[in-house]
Length: 101
Figure: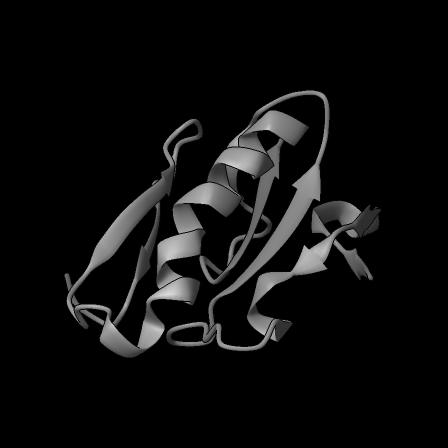
């Protein structure tokens, strides 16, 4: 998938909100990218609704492991359960079983 980023340059990655079971809140979107540097979650533009998360391969493996309980235990997951996925950038990335935690 290729999307235009700030300044018009092309970015490759996966749009998280297009994956089954994920829902962006209030029109927010997250583009996941793999790179040799670990930048964390950053805004893409001035809208404050479009973000990108740039992690190295090990960072994405860590995130996958942290997401596993939300997938495997979804029927019995505490709806108020949450998990910090990455805090390496200026924005903390949290997954929640509901809109609250």
